[in-house]
Image (cartoon, rainbow, N blue to C red; front, side, top):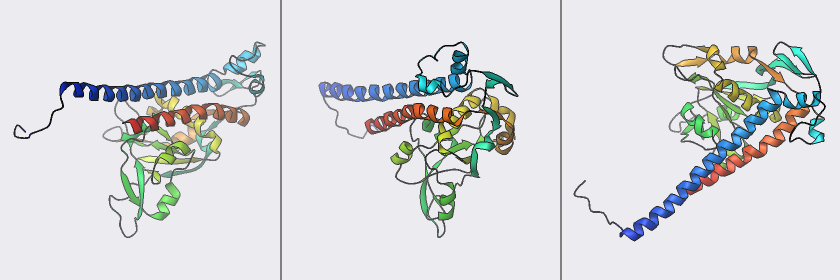
Length: 282
């Protein structure tokens, strides 16, 4: 390397370049921090409405739920009733993820290069891409080639989920979810699928997407999915079918889910916008 000659700008120009790059780095970091705050807001609202049932408890005490207009408050009951999950809002139900799923199908890793039958180029989600996708980025997803019929079945559309079912570590369970949104898909130049280490989930109703995503992320972070893992030596696998048909969840009034989705969808859209800007700056 000592034989390579390189032009070095004078110190003043170096400082000007560094100042510009530093400003860009600061803005990228600010956007990342903003995205963490926006997701924390969405998760806090989920916990308040669907875990702690704060609006219901407020109405039980004869007061308007904090930060909520009367029209939204009217969607919540004013009574909690006993259920297998403990006390839940009156009129709500206890179900399982299977009740909300329209289609669950394994992913497809396809091939590195196009073949006679694998002709459609797609971005393919791997476990390594999930953290950045969750934060609004697009990661370093590889391009894979799949059969047209496979893409038709597995292409992620707005509101679909990809759930990691293989991988993890002794301290990290499998089961990390990714939510496909219109804003994310719009940023990609080709269809989005998931590898065979993931399960693709299409819900019966698109309005459930952000509710289910935040529920899954919450129970993942709480370590609840460790109990559904198999193959603890080497690569671990999530017993997804067992989990989706057994693990109980609260199924709220559809009107409440719709109101929740309208509120948090704005937060998720801003996350995607911030991430697009950070990508452009980088």
